[in-house]
Image (cartoon, rainbow over all chains, first blue to last red; front, side, top):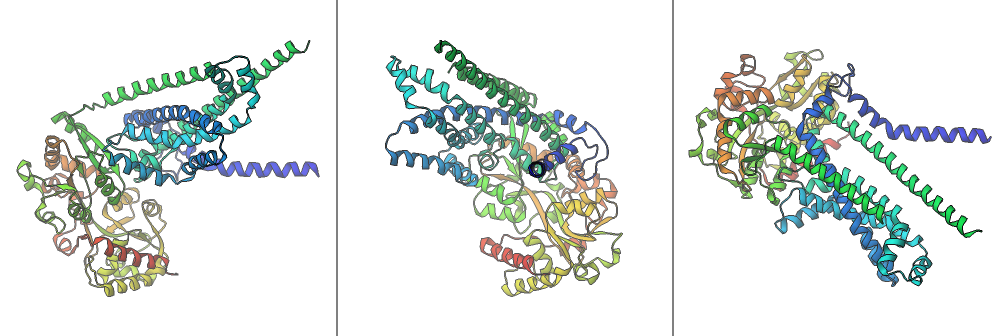
Length: 275
Length: 357
């Protein structure tokens, strides 16, 4: 009976994952097609990859997209961390809840509305659309995510930790850098990666605020898709998929490394205290 | 803390590398600050080789940005914050942009080779005297059919689409003006009618077509027709040319009783900055050899007479894409009917689409 249940559960899991990954693998598979459509597989070839690397405009857009994502999520993480610290130390419940709600409203409001309001905002102040407008809007919509990733970590932290540090004569800066930041750093990292993925795949907001020759990947692919998707896009998707895979693996290894290191340190401390 | 800082520094280092790589590529693509021209165009609607040639001849670098609908382009230009030097809207949109004061007039004295343009495609209702626009490409609405599934003499007129032989065999392009226009033409009415009774009649007529309709789709028509999924489709000439390149059993016909004639024209939006480059580019594109090369690449019909002579006879004598004068005289151009009337067209088209089969 127990074995039976185990079996079905796994079948269901396999089914769900197959459903999720089938379209991606379909796309990846046809990137190696010798032909030019996604309906007939003629034979294996690298030609779409060769086309991709010869297309300097595409490569440049990929670099710009990565740059925007890395930079925007870094700045958003810095601002979001400070914001989370402020919200954490607010004592009045009603103020704390309204700050949190203001943060959450930005999370749930549709991208299209955020994008349109940014476009109106930028043009109202005569701001030129381009790299800067995209960067600023990406930072803005990533901040709430970072705040949400860090706050639970802060709430987990025991007040006695901070009190102990203060008792031992630590200055405010030392408390922040030696106690608080190390404790919430998993949250900060998680926030950074979340912000990074949000920025990387954002279409709706970016669509509104690009201009003057600056484009990101999602917008460019959308513009090209009108003509029927060229398999060059498949080739690029394959590379991006691999890139994401490496990134996830890196994140996994990083968190595992930090947790084992922390565990080791705790054992060492406990070993010192015990005798 | 130290780890977080080194992590941030590592990201900044990667960013610096990306900036370097991106600016290297930009330099390799040859963009210089002021020696450029920004063209706001439909996707894949100009031969990239021509842009290289233009840069070699004049030194101006052409930057292309693309849009996917007239309405998206209109909004982006109206909103400001961009500096497009040239744009390529369609006929009715030119009229709308002119009314919204989004266009700068074109100085005909600075143009060379204007006489190359076929007078038939100048002085249209949407821009009398061509003060604001120059034709870039033109085309028609027509019927694509598969000669394995239907005999050619059985499908020469719009009315033939209503034949019971085509039951569940017809694809329509998902465009309110075009499909409503087709129904209006079969009833001898103008495609720009604002008469409610005419439109109601057209809708009723379309509803009788429903049993024949297999699908109302957009760009997918190209793929379906090339793969023998349907016997006939109503679509635009340029799309038809692409389908026919993939399936030699397909043919295109512009019904002789009339159809839509559409234009994509060059205009100078009010956001333009580089006037020297703009006129250099317009003159470059007016040259017959360049227009011919572009037409061969894009596959739409060129309004440039000189270019038409330079094209291979198999293209320029092809009555499917360059209809004879008699048919041309019966073609109608869409006018901008204003937002309210467009709403009526869209509503009637929607009622047709929702009609049970």
